[in-house]
Image (cartoon, helix red, strand yellow):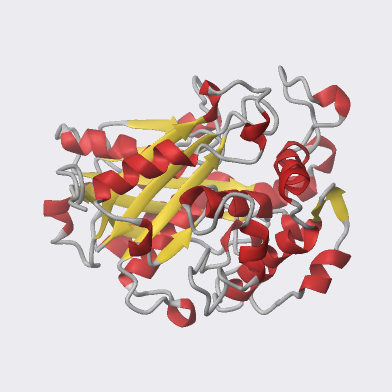
Length: 393
């Protein structure tokens, strides 16, 4: 399949990741600033080269809010022409990449730095009394739907009802990702392998999800720099090109349609990204899938076509997504076992795989990585955005 003229026009040339996991004593802004500094260093650029910046986060801010007053470009003294927040659920990195390309295309900026910082683990353990505050406007709160795991469990429940999927099959995803994390010294769960029995014996938090079905809360920061293909050739590290992007949005669907509870809006995102990149599924060497919960991984494996609808459970039980499997998924450990920095976690792992910098977990000859972002529920259990990015050499 021939790729579009929109392919390979931009490239990621620098990445930065701080220490991740349980890192108390630092602010989210400090993490974000350090990740940005590391990305500049990784690209072999000077801070004065960075003329655009985007804050990847869950929601917007404004006025005298801390995110604006103490913005990371100001702390680092970056001579940026623009700075703003972008994000939707767990997909800020994907949206930021698309936005950065627009600024580069119009010649407004030469190098755009996207950075994320969070202190979710520290904040969640220091301020436990605030962790379950109801969110305004969400109808599920009076019925106990106060955390992401409760309404994401709807997906898993419906999949079990429709297709006979079992808890052990969801557990196979957690076990596979933990095996990858044990090959990643930077992962929070490095050196802590699990078995399916460990998964089954971990406590239920929101049926059918056990503790080990649920992504980590993480401190730390992640950042990347994107520029034009022409400028990318002059940077220190080999460029990782943006081959294609696509987006889907379940808000266009009727919320009462039961099919929306056993699928993410993969189809439009996949079709656009693959068409622009000029690839087919068989061309993908490694998949870095947004894995807030094990169920979302299964839905994506089915949605992209690695297995048929409803057959995700038996597919993962074969070991297909773990080390040595037919499609390596979340090779750094993902959000489940490495760290939760929204979709910057899969984006940066995709970059490392294409660069050949993943150490023991490196997929030999990896040339094309499929990266996804997901989230931003408008109704519990559905109406979520889905982003697909194809990265490659």
